[in-house]
Amino acid sequence: MGVFSFPCAVAAVAWILLVVPVLLFPAVKGADLSAVSMNWTCLVYGGTMAAALIWYGFSARFWFTGPKVAHFQIPLTERSRLIDQTRAKRHRFHRKVNGLIEFQGET
Image (cartoon, rainbow, N blue to C red; front, side):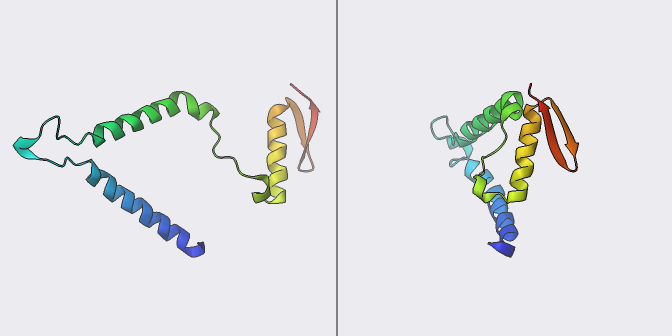
């Protein structure tokens, strides 16, 4: 999308911020409101979002790393840097020499 990607993203977020609260309003208002005619979307949506945020806060933030990217979509220099970083995390003993990481043993 090029130069239009950021304006499209802003428009999409603005639309979501406008439409979601409107959809949460009850369809019936006033004295006619009852448990049967109530719009339960706010409870279902809010409960689902609260459960997801609590789960992320207590568990997923420690292991979730984001979506996987296919190796052919990463430039070669970036790919080699990511491989070096991954190897460095797996090995306890490593040192940087001339910008490259040398591995001296595994954990």
